[in-house]
Amino acid sequence: MLHGRIIAESLRPGTELAVPGLALTSLTRVDVAASAGPGQPPVWTLIDVAAPNAAAGQLAAALSSALAADGGWYADFRDGPDHVVVFAGHIFRYPAGDAERRAEAVAYGRRAGVPESQLDWDD
Image 1 (cartoon, rainbow, N blue to C red):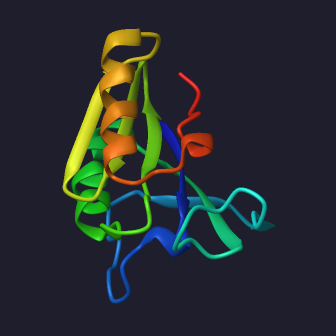
Image 2 (cartoon, rainbow, N blue to C red):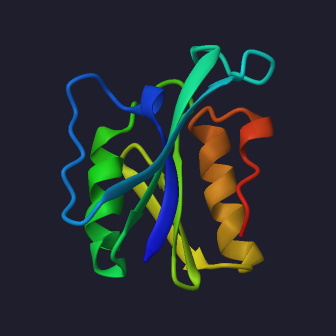
């Protein structure tokens, strides 16, 4: 099973994530006013999800299409030994612990406007 987190506010209005086997495991509202980036709301809805590993490619593609291009948003999930980090229109997949590939994703995130404090995903 793959596991990840999606911030509801990062999704473009009108989008739908329809991925076979995608299941919500937890939903939490959090106040992030102190760390929200420019254009990001002060309260986020965190959606923890799980899906069969076979759905990883479809989930990454769906997120890549659904994420807002502005606001510095990304989503990420673990697929076995791999970490998948998704931005609007761009997907990074690398083995957890691969510092070079992680650095590429972080650099892309900076260019996409992700605040530095949010480029802290775990590998």
